[in-house]
Amino acid sequence: KAGVTQTPRYLIKTRGQQVTLSCSPISGHRSVSWYQQTPGQGLQFLFEYFSETQRNKGNFPGRFSGRQFSNSRSEMNVSTLELGDSALYLCASSSKRDSYNEQFFGPGTRLTVL
Amino acid sequence: AQTVTQSQPEMSVQEAETVTLSCTYDTSESDYYLFWYKQPPSRQMILVIRQEAYKQQNATENRFSVNFQKAAKSFSLKISDSQLGDAAMYFCVLSGSRLTFGEGTQLTVNP
Image 1 (cartoon, one colour):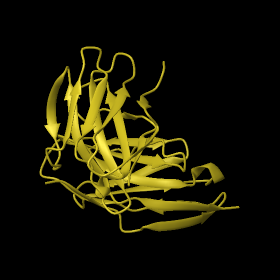
Image 2 (cartoon, chains in turn brown, purple):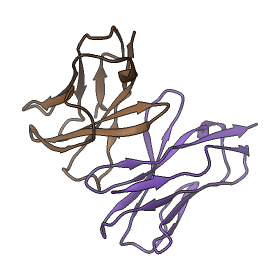
Image 3 (spheres, one colour):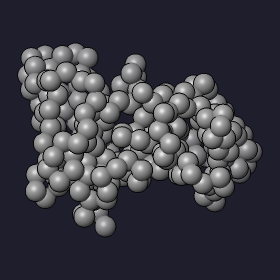
């Protein structure tokens, strides 16, 4: 079974631009969660989607948004990029809605904002 | 609010020796899971071991085992017979409505 895939793997943007990251979960997984990893803040939860509905959201500004499609693929969008948005963005999928189950992580998208 | 604390930013161990990584947590939920994930230089997050809070028996996975002290809210990871491939950042993670990650412990394995 193929693992979680994230595209693109690397991205360079400038301040003020917007960016869209994509995540394809493991086949059959309906839950997709997004995390931001930075050296200063560590790993922080962004949001979780299950069956096309956002079920949970972390403490991030409204510039961060996401969606999930009927095939469980998910996209994350960041508008009006700031230097502080430079981070590794990890996507994880799970077979069930709750976080008690193991989440399988993708390789991440490294976003650099100049 | 859930919190996870890893008080050891860095640890090192000699190959074939044993090392223990510490973790304490806090949660108001009665039902939760605890995990240890590792993140090698490739940045791929990999599950090492999982512990259900309702189980008193400590989880083990080959060379990896945990010491789960529910009353003390402590969850340490023991790696036996350390191998070079164990070198990574290790995260203690608490489940609930969402996953809460500790700050991580960077483990170095010396040959």
